[in-house]
Length: 426
Image (cartoon, rainbow, N blue to C red; front, top):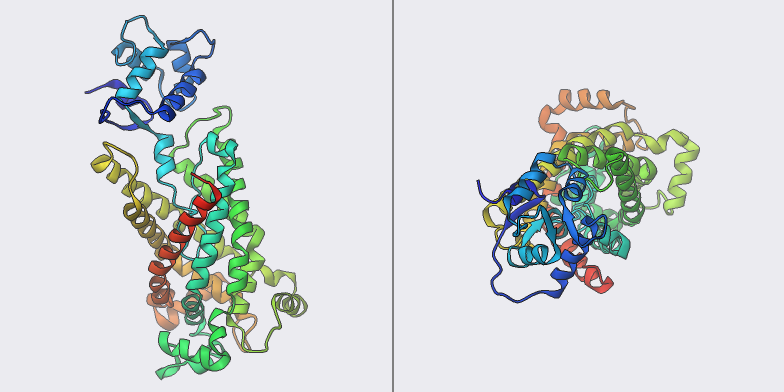
């Protein structure tokens, strides 16, 4: 069965030190944890103190007692652990706890492929108190801005393709044979209609909404986690609880910034001279369609959070656990390629699952601005698309969406890492 500590403590693996050198930083962290567990400050940790600490983190009382009886730390058999026993055990039998893994496996702020529907990363109390969280958020916002700007032409083509079947007015010169826009003909048509700058229409507001959406989502996520924990302050959330908290936080953020989503779609589809800018677009929508127009497509957008966040989280955790079991014996650090690969694959799976709802959302946002376009509900759009094109019609525009994944991930990772270092975020 092995060391009970490795089966019951919140750890993943255990490895011998490669040498007998002592890392002062690691010893300091062990000392801080020892202080937290030593509730009565007598210099020793007893079973009651260990039980209190582990129970607060969701571990059973029997597990605590088995750890205490095992002698893996309590070498003198007194049923208490002094500092020397504690220090020697972890310096020469280092473990990788959940905080170590969380530190190395953060990805939600690092990788931006155009949607911000993933479950936020968890941060340690030390990171929150030091202000490192906000430095990570700032680095992530900068990474997302560069990534979205670099892939904006593909994103604009995607929006045109999503709308081109039932609203032929939007593709104009970009139509190919048969009256439907194609990827390369669409790009040529955009340049022909408004010059090279037309490829970046709608990008400004797409970048503008990153900061408020990320901040609102993270703050909501932290508050919802507290509500789920209740009296168990500091307890780790189970996977399904993280999914629930992340989905509710995503819905909160989307509700707050959704008018910007509508404006982004309208500005992306606009023709030269249609709007003089962001405020003019907002004013025209308000005058002609009313306040409700700013929430067209809101329902499919919120519903899309569930498959996106759920599948992204499930795939990422599965890949992470598989790597840790296979290769995490010496270190929980996966390295750049593994981290980026896992994050990209999980986010792509989430996008594929939620894409039909994203397409319906975009059409509902766009339909009111196009002459002769039918004003359909979410179910009306679904029936119309399937009846006209079949199920494959629900995935129109997904090719440019896939094409932008590699450049988007590459740009966001490089910018994030450089910004993180510049801001002093570990």
